[in-house]
Amino acid sequence: MTTGWLVFTDLDGTLLDHNSYDHRDAVPALRKLRERQIPVILVSSKTQAELAVLIQKLGLEGPMIGENGSVIIYPGEPPQIAPPGYLQIRDYLVDSRTNPNYGTLGFGDMTVEEVMEATGLEHDMAKLAMHRLGSEAFFWQGSEADLKQFRQDIAHIGLRLLKGGRFYHLLGDTDKGKAVKYVTRHLKKKGQAVTKTIGLGDSDNDREMLLAVDIPIIVRKHDGTHIILEQRPDAIITDLPGPAGWNQAIQNLLQQSET
Image 1 (cartoon, one colour):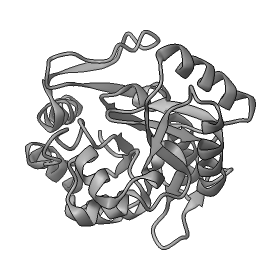
Image 2 (tube, helix red, strand yellow):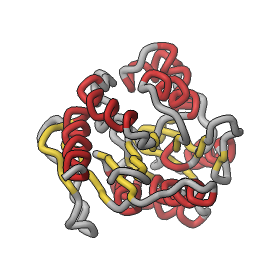
Image 3 (cartoon, helix red, strand yellow):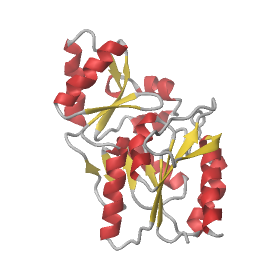
């Protein structure tokens, strides 16, 4: 029985192709989930503005989790933003450059054209990627040793550093896993029956999300590699990469539930 399932999914490299941002290989599974009224909840490093466009493109409804858990969006409600919020995070990133070893280049330092080049996004979507509420995406331009010290420094003031598929992300004391648990509890309190949670991701910043669900699914990368989730030996690893692997894994789960 699939009644009561929640599907939480990363986007880039998972439900969307890492390079083309196309989701067509996942359409069959998305269609079956829609037929069974199983919610698909986006959990992404993308901004609320980007997710608002993508949720329509994907034909989805319901909650969304943006900026690696920093922003939670319920339909018809203002976004819930994890403290300290974008402005303070942005200020810290800029102030940290008084240390000449801390080389950072954030979206707030870049033009739309530079974000387009860095992400491969078209102009309008690149602008939406810059409308941040709870975190800052940036390039690290220093050494690995300095990055380790930078990570320690931000931990002292209650911030976190995550490594995504393309960028580092500076955010408050939250992550995708905490947001997934919060949304699950919220839906239960609202009366939604939740019997099983499924999570799909491909990158290091998906680890907490995968650990927070009942069935973690690791989506293989295009080069055949995949992240290792030592804490969950039960994790499913897709044979195929990106949205094709997403489709395969969901189809298999649905088929197993019918036998």
